[in-house]
Image (cartoon, rainbow, N blue to C red; front, side):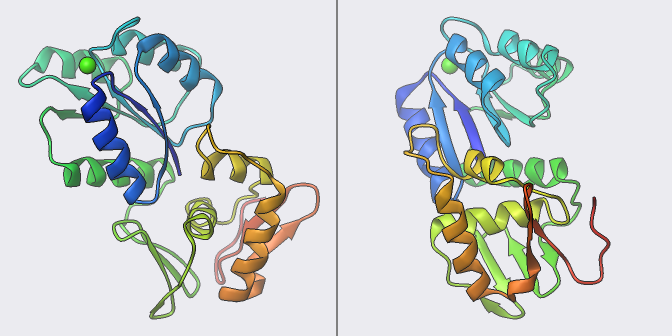
Length: 225
Ligand code: CA
Protein backbone atom coordinates (compact mmCIF):
# COMPACT_ATOMS: atom_id res chain seq x y z
CA UNK A 1 0.00 0.00 0.00
CA UNK A 2 1.43 3.34 -1.09
CA UNK A 3 0.58 6.50 0.83
CA UNK A 4 1.03 10.20 0.16
CA UNK A 5 1.92 12.19 3.27
CA UNK A 6 1.46 15.96 3.01
CA UNK A 7 2.83 17.82 6.01
CA UNK A 8 4.94 20.97 5.96
CA UNK A 9 6.25 20.78 9.51
CA UNK A 10 9.63 18.99 9.05
CA UNK A 11 9.81 17.26 12.43
CA UNK A 12 6.23 16.01 12.32
CA UNK A 13 6.47 14.84 8.71
CA UNK A 14 9.67 12.90 9.43
CA UNK A 15 8.05 11.34 12.49
CA UNK A 16 4.86 10.36 10.64
CA UNK A 17 6.83 8.96 7.71
CA UNK A 18 8.76 6.78 10.13
CA UNK A 19 5.60 5.55 11.86
CA UNK A 20 3.94 4.68 8.55
CA UNK A 21 7.02 2.96 7.14
CA UNK A 22 7.39 0.85 10.26
CA UNK A 23 3.82 -0.31 9.64
CA UNK A 24 5.02 -1.52 6.19
CA UNK A 25 3.47 1.21 4.08
CA UNK A 26 5.50 2.87 1.35
CA UNK A 27 5.33 6.63 1.78
CA UNK A 28 5.96 9.63 -0.49
CA UNK A 29 6.29 12.85 1.48
CA UNK A 30 5.62 16.34 0.15
CA UNK A 31 5.79 19.59 2.08
CA UNK A 32 3.67 22.08 0.16
CA UNK A 33 0.24 22.29 -1.40
CA UNK A 34 1.32 22.74 -4.99
CA UNK A 35 3.43 19.60 -5.08
CA UNK A 36 0.75 17.76 -3.09
CA UNK A 37 -1.88 18.58 -5.68
CA UNK A 38 0.38 17.45 -8.51
CA UNK A 39 1.39 14.18 -6.83
CA UNK A 40 -2.19 13.30 -5.88
CA UNK A 41 -3.36 13.94 -9.43
CA UNK A 42 -0.60 11.95 -11.14
CA UNK A 43 0.40 9.08 -8.86
CA UNK A 44 -1.84 6.18 -7.89
CA UNK A 45 -1.96 6.39 -4.09
CA UNK A 46 -3.94 4.03 -1.91
CA UNK A 47 -4.48 6.80 0.65
CA UNK A 48 -3.40 10.37 1.43
CA UNK A 49 -2.71 11.97 4.80
CA UNK A 50 -3.23 15.67 4.21
CA UNK A 51 -2.41 18.56 6.53
CA UNK A 52 -4.75 21.51 5.95
CA UNK A 53 -2.37 24.38 6.74
CA UNK A 54 0.18 24.24 3.94
CA UNK A 55 2.41 26.71 2.09
CA UNK A 56 1.72 27.25 -1.62
CA UNK A 57 -1.82 25.97 -1.64
CA UNK A 58 -3.99 25.13 1.36
CA UNK A 59 -5.02 21.55 2.00
CA UNK A 60 -8.72 22.13 1.33
CA UNK A 61 -8.00 23.48 -2.15
CA UNK A 62 -5.73 20.51 -2.80
CA UNK A 63 -8.43 18.11 -1.70
CA UNK A 64 -11.07 19.82 -3.85
CA UNK A 65 -8.76 19.68 -6.87
CA UNK A 66 -8.23 15.93 -6.37
CA UNK A 67 -11.94 15.24 -6.03
CA UNK A 68 -12.84 17.41 -9.00
CA UNK A 69 -10.44 15.31 -11.07
CA UNK A 70 -12.17 12.16 -9.73
CA UNK A 71 -9.24 11.04 -7.63
CA UNK A 72 -11.05 8.80 -5.18
CA UNK A 73 -8.34 7.57 -2.79
CA UNK A 74 -9.26 7.86 0.89
CA UNK A 75 -8.05 11.13 2.40
CA UNK A 76 -7.35 11.62 6.08
CA UNK A 77 -7.01 15.29 6.96
CA UNK A 78 -4.93 16.69 9.81
CA UNK A 79 -6.47 19.71 11.52
CA UNK A 80 -5.40 22.14 14.20
CA UNK A 81 -6.79 21.60 17.67
CA UNK A 82 -10.46 22.40 18.20
CA UNK A 83 -10.95 23.77 14.75
CA UNK A 84 -14.38 22.24 14.17
CA UNK A 85 -14.94 24.49 11.16
CA UNK A 86 -11.97 22.89 9.35
CA UNK A 87 -13.36 19.43 10.03
CA UNK A 88 -16.80 20.25 8.66
CA UNK A 89 -15.46 21.99 5.57
CA UNK A 90 -12.89 19.22 5.09
CA UNK A 91 -15.48 16.47 5.14
CA UNK A 92 -17.70 18.45 2.78
CA UNK A 93 -14.72 18.83 0.46
CA UNK A 94 -14.33 15.05 0.26
CA UNK A 95 -12.20 14.00 3.24
CA UNK A 96 -12.97 10.54 4.60
CA UNK A 97 -11.76 11.11 8.14
CA UNK A 98 -9.80 13.61 10.21
CA UNK A 99 -7.31 13.69 13.05
CA UNK A 100 -6.84 16.62 15.39
CA UNK A 101 -3.28 17.59 16.26
CA UNK A 102 -1.64 16.52 18.45
CA UNK A 103 -2.53 12.85 18.04
CA UNK A 104 -0.99 9.56 19.00
CA UNK A 105 0.69 7.60 16.21
CA UNK A 106 -1.39 4.52 17.09
CA UNK A 107 -4.55 6.48 16.35
CA UNK A 108 -3.18 7.55 12.98
CA UNK A 109 -2.37 3.93 12.12
CA UNK A 110 -5.80 2.69 13.24
CA UNK A 111 -7.55 5.27 11.07
CA UNK A 112 -5.32 4.52 8.08
CA UNK A 113 -6.06 0.78 8.41
CA UNK A 114 -9.80 1.43 8.67
CA UNK A 115 -9.84 3.68 5.61
CA UNK A 116 -7.81 1.23 3.50
CA UNK A 117 -10.07 -1.61 4.59
CA UNK A 118 -13.22 0.31 3.72
CA UNK A 119 -11.79 1.39 0.38
CA UNK A 120 -11.16 -2.26 -0.46
CA UNK A 121 -14.69 -3.18 0.61
CA UNK A 122 -13.75 -5.17 3.70
CA UNK A 123 -15.69 -4.73 6.92
CA UNK A 124 -13.55 -6.78 9.29
CA UNK A 125 -10.04 -5.98 10.48
CA UNK A 126 -8.43 -9.16 9.16
CA UNK A 127 -8.64 -10.06 5.50
CA UNK A 128 -8.83 -13.75 4.66
CA UNK A 129 -8.32 -15.74 1.49
CA UNK A 130 -8.50 -19.52 1.80
CA UNK A 131 -5.72 -20.51 4.24
CA UNK A 132 -4.27 -16.96 4.25
CA UNK A 133 -5.06 -14.27 6.78
CA UNK A 134 -3.75 -10.70 6.60
CA UNK A 135 -3.47 -8.86 9.89
CA UNK A 136 -2.79 -5.21 8.97
CA UNK A 137 -2.28 -4.22 12.63
CA UNK A 138 0.79 -6.40 12.88
CA UNK A 139 1.69 -6.16 9.18
CA UNK A 140 1.75 -9.95 9.13
CA UNK A 141 0.24 -12.65 6.98
CA UNK A 142 -0.61 -16.05 8.36
CA UNK A 143 -0.81 -19.35 6.51
CA UNK A 144 -3.23 -21.53 8.43
CA UNK A 145 -2.02 -20.77 11.94
CA UNK A 146 1.63 -20.00 11.24
CA UNK A 147 2.99 -16.53 10.47
CA UNK A 148 4.70 -16.32 7.07
CA UNK A 149 8.31 -15.18 7.00
CA UNK A 150 8.22 -12.50 4.30
CA UNK A 151 10.57 -9.72 3.26
CA UNK A 152 9.01 -6.25 3.29
CA UNK A 153 8.52 -6.35 -0.49
CA UNK A 154 7.01 -9.82 -0.43
CA UNK A 155 4.65 -8.66 2.30
CA UNK A 156 3.59 -5.62 0.28
CA UNK A 157 2.94 -7.66 -2.85
CA UNK A 158 0.90 -10.31 -1.07
CA UNK A 159 -0.95 -7.77 1.09
CA UNK A 160 -1.88 -5.79 -2.03
CA UNK A 161 -3.14 -8.93 -3.77
CA UNK A 162 -5.14 -9.83 -0.67
CA UNK A 163 -6.71 -6.36 -0.50
CA UNK A 164 -7.68 -6.87 -4.15
CA UNK A 165 -8.35 -10.59 -4.00
CA UNK A 166 -10.23 -12.03 -6.93
CA UNK A 167 -9.25 -9.08 -9.13
CA UNK A 168 -6.70 -8.98 -11.93
CA UNK A 169 -3.73 -6.89 -10.78
CA UNK A 170 -1.13 -5.90 -13.38
CA UNK A 171 2.61 -5.84 -12.79
CA UNK A 172 2.59 -2.08 -13.34
CA UNK A 173 -0.10 -1.66 -10.70
CA UNK A 174 1.86 -3.76 -8.23
CA UNK A 175 5.02 -1.77 -8.98
CA UNK A 176 3.20 1.50 -8.43
CA UNK A 177 1.78 0.42 -5.10
CA UNK A 178 4.75 -1.27 -3.46
CA UNK A 179 7.51 1.25 -4.17
CA UNK A 180 7.86 4.88 -3.11
CA UNK A 181 8.47 7.34 -5.90
CA UNK A 182 12.16 7.86 -5.16
CA UNK A 183 12.81 4.12 -5.35
CA UNK A 184 14.58 2.65 -8.35
CA UNK A 185 11.68 0.63 -9.73
CA UNK A 186 11.91 -2.37 -11.95
CA UNK A 187 8.71 -4.19 -12.80
CA UNK A 188 10.69 -7.35 -13.57
CA UNK A 189 11.33 -7.77 -9.88
CA UNK A 190 7.60 -8.33 -9.40
CA UNK A 191 8.01 -11.70 -11.12
CA UNK A 192 10.75 -12.55 -8.67
CA UNK A 193 8.57 -11.67 -5.69
CA UNK A 194 5.66 -13.69 -7.11
CA UNK A 195 7.94 -16.71 -7.64
CA UNK A 196 9.18 -16.49 -4.07
CA UNK A 197 5.66 -16.09 -2.71
CA UNK A 198 4.52 -19.18 -4.61
CA UNK A 199 7.12 -21.18 -2.72
CA UNK A 200 5.85 -19.85 0.61
CA UNK A 201 2.10 -20.26 0.10
CA UNK A 202 0.08 -22.82 -1.92
CA UNK A 203 1.31 -21.89 -5.40
CA UNK A 204 -2.11 -22.18 -7.10
CA UNK A 205 -3.49 -19.30 -5.02
CA UNK A 206 -1.61 -16.81 -7.21
CA UNK A 207 -2.83 -17.19 -10.77
CA UNK A 208 -0.97 -15.72 -13.74
CA UNK A 209 -3.36 -14.05 -16.18
CA UNK A 210 -1.67 -13.83 -19.54
CA UNK A 211 -1.28 -10.20 -20.59
CA UNK A 212 -3.14 -8.98 -17.51
CA UNK A 213 -0.99 -9.81 -14.52
CA UNK A 214 -1.92 -11.79 -11.45
CA UNK A 215 -4.97 -12.72 -9.44
CA UNK A 216 -5.21 -14.07 -5.94
CA UNK A 217 -7.81 -16.81 -6.13
CA UNK A 218 -9.55 -17.55 -2.87
CA UNK A 219 -10.89 -21.11 -2.64
CA UNK A 220 -14.66 -21.21 -2.25
CA UNK A 221 -15.17 -17.70 -3.59
CA UNK A 222 -16.14 -16.69 -7.08
CA UNK A 223 -13.62 -14.33 -8.60
CA UNK A 224 -14.31 -11.15 -10.48
CA UNK A 225 -13.68 -11.27 -14.23
CA1 CA B 1 0.87 22.76 8.53
